[in-house]
Length: 472
Image (cartoon, rainbow, N blue to C red):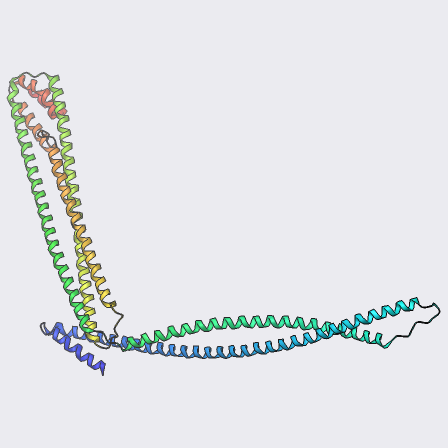
């Protein structure tokens, strides 16, 4: 009857929950809830049978312990009666020994008296004349011999009695120790019986109690609210961090592109200025050796500046790679957190469904066990989210640090403009200068400019041959 009622209640609750949604999505949920209800009822019936079996086993153990206790008490009473009989027999033996001792003492005194009289008579006979015959043995001597034999036999019996008395004392002590050990075992059995009775009472109370469904529902609602609040706060923080990170990345990319454009523009201006200066100084006489040293020094400076700029570009690319890795790590952390939130929602939803389905059939757990379990789960989730927030803040600080380092590297590069040209630009300039020298009619100016241009542009042998051939 309770099972049918629970099924009806579950159907009603599932129907009330799924009224607002479409019919196609409510049917699988109802079937799933029915399956879970059936599983819970089977588990509850199995648990109830196990509890009944445990109670029957406890009762059988209690009955067996009571029988053993009664048997041990009966054996104790029998042992006490046996000890009493031994004590009475020992007292009787002691009385007999005392009587024999007094009789032996009297006989010993009589024997001493007879020996004294015999010695006196012997002395008298020795004092008599030698011709007289020894007197015949008197009846007193024969009596003394008999008494001596009797005393010897009584002494032997007394020793045997003493030995038996010692053995009886040892047996009595051994049985008294056995009785004491049995009393200790009986006390232990009594304590075990009391513990089993208390356990049986607690099990019966648990079987008779009914869970408070209102408290369970209130606790579940509170935990759902806490979970929703944590999720909203986390999404808000996540969106702000993602927006800030994207803005920083866009700003860095824009600054880098602007600097690259400025550098290209400066390079083009320097190339044009170098060509104009070369053409403007055709009428001036330049000493080849100092000009060669100056050009070598300028070339070294340009090479160092090129190396610094390439280092700066490599640092920027490394920072971009690290930033991409940080973004990937942040995405992984976000996916893990979303999975955790989804698992927590499924877990609390499953707990709520089981509580509503089981109704009054599920026995109430110990006080505070369900609440503490849910609270611990929510606390773990909140702690996990806070750890990931700290990790995101650390990633944000690391991105800011990279941005500051990039700006510092850009500011610390040499302030002098880059005069170096690329390989393609140098080749193009070389070809233009060669054509200019070959087409120029002023051979003297070409001869003066040739060493300087050779050092700057590094003419090949073919270029030098073509220029000298054109000058002739």
